Length: 88
Image (tube, rainbow, N blue to C red):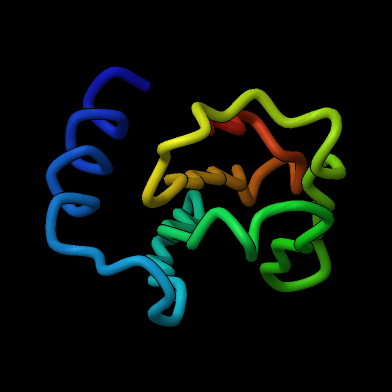
């Protein structure tokens, strides 16, 4: 998992807030990377294949008031078809 996090961190450096999510698929997992504008985070749904997750509402999010973006990383292990990691 540490290698995946390092790769994700590197790939996120070139993402622009508001652009379409980037999805990398391998035989074992799908990696969904997104950088959202703060106004687009609350209640947003992240979907990949038959899996999805809905982000918390605004009053439940922990964001600094001066945040310019929020990074979202979702790793789906295909062997289990579960969300194994959700990092904001």
